[in-house]
Length: 411
Image (cartoon, rainbow, N blue to C red):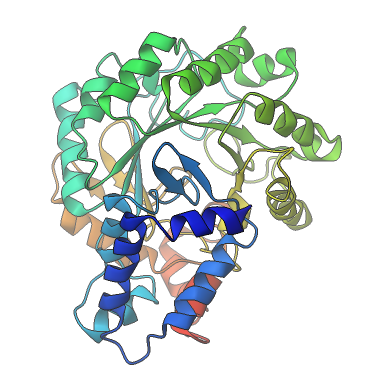
């Protein structure tokens, strides 16, 4: 299936234009070889499933569509000219993160057992003007994906206004939601405002179990209605599941995947329980290394057959074999008060985007966080955020950067 869509992509003028511009920029370095970029690309897609949504070709929801201006934007947002541009690229240095997720509100009527934001942003939110200011600053910085999370972002009546302020030539907007009250009319309004995609949380095939996990009666029905309305409105429609060991052990995760495929989900995002918010570092729900490897294998299994939807499993993408953990380099997070940090799952902030210069805050955070790691910072037991950069000084970069650079890269 990837072969067929790759052939179609090869005829897409915007994709060809994007990659030709990247190739020309890289060619200033004598260390750059196009064969290495091809090897790098093949490694990225070997256990993934490329899809087309409307006119967009999508690798996954962690990067903008391959034929979009936003994709070219993230590729070019690397420091240096001439040979330095390629050198900095293969060392994970950036002028802006690929993505920034904004807690559009701390308000939420659900009480999810795993909530990462529960302790810090309860019932807090910025006004429309402040949120528009933050979005504008992220766009000016060069962020390629702006995601709205929470709390529950659909509780904001001004969400369409905020999304409509995003320039699609710079950034792709996404929403991460429980699906609460997402009518067809609201989904259509969000699509008209410029929303590209929405991810709806669904953690079980069993209605009662999902409602209990989300702490809200009717959460399951709300999620299914939201998925169907998002599809009808023409949004790139994703699910998001917190995969517990029980879901894997009893095979329910595969049942859920088959059900979501029948609903027409275009991407199934799967994350594991992480030691933040409601879950302490020693929480029994946290997965072992073997169970995390099972999740990586789940990514491969789900993408291997059409009986399941396209899947994006976080431990797979954050592994040494792919992109690694990009907290503070590839990714960033803005909480409901405007504080800016490296990740949704790290309680660490470097400044406030309403009062501080975003360039200065980003550079401070990027320098402290270091380059992409071969491990997830949020689940690295015993590693305090302040020690992350020191730990990474003599570490290898993830395989994406290794292959692009044509060999072993030591920092």
